[in-house]
Length: 377
Image (cartoon, helix red, strand yellow):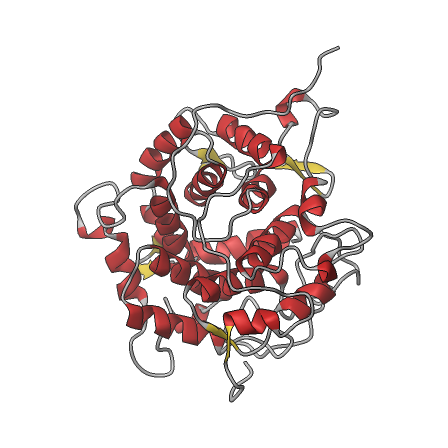
């Protein structure tokens, strides 16, 4: 995903944060409808064998945490609630960093307020991400850092969802409805086992906004257009991956299989760029590739032959962005974004390499900070 676009999307999340009439297809059937897709949705949060690449990435993240327990954003140089929540998810996904998860969660419990709301308006994406981190960390989402009403992440999620009218199921303000916020909030509501009626309504709202090509546009209030990285418009891989994970987690329905959309989005080297086309002026990047990998894991399509490019799978393409033993010791395990070390890309890539889709459940964590076993001269 281009840095400017990715930062813009995250700024939208921080600030707050379909083919109508189509026959609904169950998620498992939507996957099976395409050549190479197999099985039913993978259980979310289930522990898998962690690769050396995933473990080394988690070790880099563990060492990147500040003494306070927060991730200090590499761009703003300020502690970031969103990046810290992502770090918790990445570490838990790999089963690494017990002490770091503990301290990061403690910091987040006392510093999430401005991230999940601004000027009285809820940021559904931010609220959803913090809630997902609380679940992964195994702490109480109802009393996240205290017993005040503002500490009840579950109640705040439920209150943020519209319950009547055309916006039924939408989280947050209608004027700023976007796939990131809606998907993260829905994933969080599923993770905390929220009311079934609210989950169904939120899933239905998101599913209705799927484009005919199988993708989702970042904005949920503008008409679907043809993906075009030159005009920064149309369905994108990141929004689509999050929406797919949310709908699968909710046990919902897809009107169109997203697999052809991902297939046409894949680059020749097995990676994925931000917009739903290959080439055309864009290159693959690790955070987009990581999110698509998670989505394919959720759909049980990660091993499909249609996603192999020149013998390179999406997971291998993602690993190819990682700095290894030929890099300076401080960068080993980190991921490269267009040739430069990227903290944010690393946070996004690690859960995918751990073989998990959102939401991620709690698990027993090791204390070790893994690293590549590089020989010294």
